[in-house]
Length: 417
Image 1 (spheres, one colour):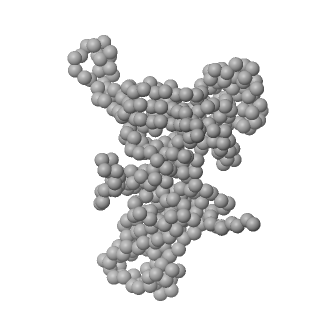
Image 2 (image 1 turned 90 degrees about the vertical axis):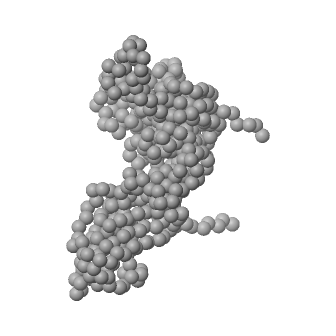
Image 3 (image 1 turned 180 degrees about the vertical axis):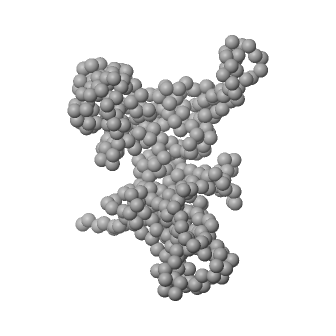
């Protein structure tokens, strides 16, 4: 069996920026007017080693500031590393800053030829690709108008169409697959699938963990400029979720019991959620966690998740009802339940009591973004009372390798004879 050739090889890539307190300090250093170091060193990348084989689809994930975009810009030649070596075998098309080379006074056709020429194509080669580019962008007669008259959606569609249709050997993408409306996104992903089937090398950064899980053969996890790990998508997504809530030790690579960052613990929480109620019962805390007990708002489809809330009662309440609902981004209620329906708790509580309620269930929602609302209600002499409600207070991200039709996966078993 023929060994896979290397498409990208990075060795000990470091990128350091000099941060000056005052503009004149930069001038002093440039002219050698000071013997002291007048800057602080800020490392965007620290000794990164990467090897990407031809035909691989590799995802890069990490928190903001982890160095994801920096490594892509170094690979594409937009930035030079401070130290380290880089070898790239194959022509690159980079979907980083879409439309960066466009002239806003030119019309769409003129910009296609301008960008194509910048990428090294002859006029004849661009002529041959023009029909495919126009069909993919699908912006109609606007292609004959100056780009400054385009909506932002039309602009990125054209820029994406130019970049995606030059038939590169290596495709590098930084969040660009989220441009345009849902139909254009579907077209982009279809093109992505075509590239994979053609054996192209694909390297992409995304916060969309569902796309990472679905398309990637391998995932690289960066954190604060260092390579935290690489491996199969599910393993790296699990590790990333621990990083998000401060439950990952870079030294040991294990969870740190009881250590959570106050800043990251708020991941997925809507600080401006609508709330109301008498506060006879008040929701003090709430968390989402996966089946391993890791606090996270990103759950793998098909796995168990736990939604927990802590409620303190400021008055005696007869048989409080604890509830949650899940909505889509448009506000449609998809599902939910409460302790009365489930016949899980029908007792009274005294003033000063604290109850911790945990809902546990399997997630069969399709991959995507959802909103969770929480509530404590009850009946007083047959009159319904709201003690405390928090609307759209939590974001739930369902990570999926396979999305079927609608909101739920039927988990069908199929037999063909």
